[in-house]
Image (cartoon, rainbow, N blue to C red; front, side, top):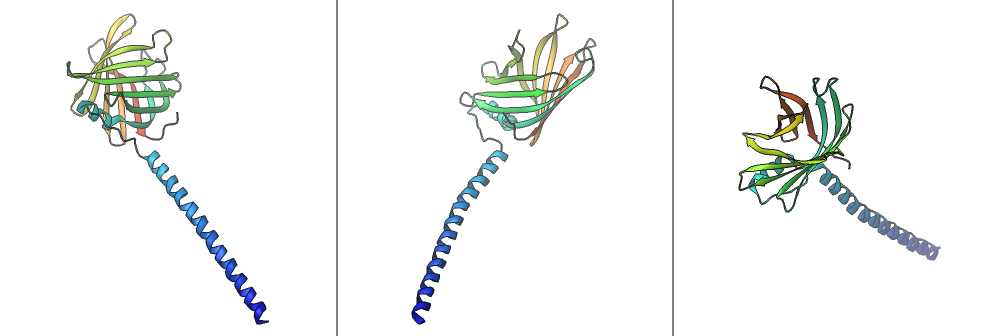
Length: 209
């Protein structure tokens, strides 16, 4: 009787030991996985950390680098008789060793599909930013788009577009908050005033590409 109890006791201890070992293995396996998942989630929630050796580009990068969800609104007028809107995503990153900023946009809506990018860099000799753009226009996809500069906390891009056969001044104006930016595209009207044509509001998000 005592011998059988002893055997049972030893078997019970062995089963308990095996159970503890198994539990330890499961916990040890889960903790790294959970930590890795949490780290990935935190990484997705945090804007990419990029820096530039060019102070002027560093300032622009701090305002724009990251992923954004966008809503565009077109004002009723000659360009958009019925108005219009689009929703989409923007991804902004530094390129070429931090010397250029690449602003990629994908959106769609009643105003039509838009795929494009802006490339911005600092021209030290000219003491201004230069802007190159490409959009989904098969006939004329890419062009230089004027120059840009800061006006206080506003980043503005002045350029010309052909409207009804005439070169017409345009201005894109970016305003910033820590979690959003707004881009207003305005065209010079016949009376000399700048009239808003498109307003794009962007909030930080997780763009899907």
